[in-house]
Length: 310
View 1 (cartoon, rainbow, N blue to C red):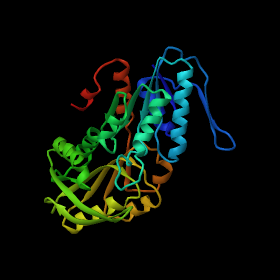
View 2: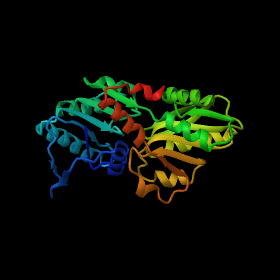
View 3: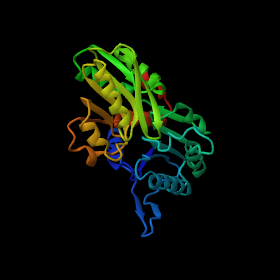
């Protein structure tokens, strides 16, 4: 087994390598003056099982193209098999036709990765579980819920908790967390009056006087989560904590969160947000490296990955 890192989230790749007591493959990845990507593998990998670690965050198109070129370089270097580890799967929100005459970009990206020469996919908290079916390859979708549950048990002493889904689509994720915490469940009923904007219509469930734990897979501009936190506080919630796997945090999201009713936003390091959040007292980052590292170890040893979540 050998590990190759793209440039999308090098700090996470180094943590995973440290957990596995491995060195990253000696490689050279650079951009030409016109933006073209060049990848060179500087060591012999013939007959090895290779794990590429590349997150598809901003700049998502550059990181995707870099991943495809890395796969091609490994395939042409006679790697035995290639497992693509994508901590954050970009384009996952475009998983169906919401309106006529639009692309299903998640399917397109899965085709590109498959045709480039990947043999297996490992990712974390896919936006929609059905994306696994877009691949004609084995897909391991890891969950951050156990990491969040451990953090909650350690850091939130008041046990009067309720897990909150920020929309109807997030109920399954909120229910999974509530089971681990033996907590209640509530749902935010929201509407979208325009693309990229949300309006909270109602809160389903009893949240008065309780510590609310909003859980979601992605926080992008932050509008939906901030509006949900305000609605919960207006309905009598005590404190609002937000647990999100992928902190995209685009635009002025960090400022929006700092000025919101959210007490703490807890994200993982699937996306490297070091420069964005260093001045935010409300944002906490948990590392996903041990979870991904353990999954890589189990795949390499041909043992069960699903046992991680039992």
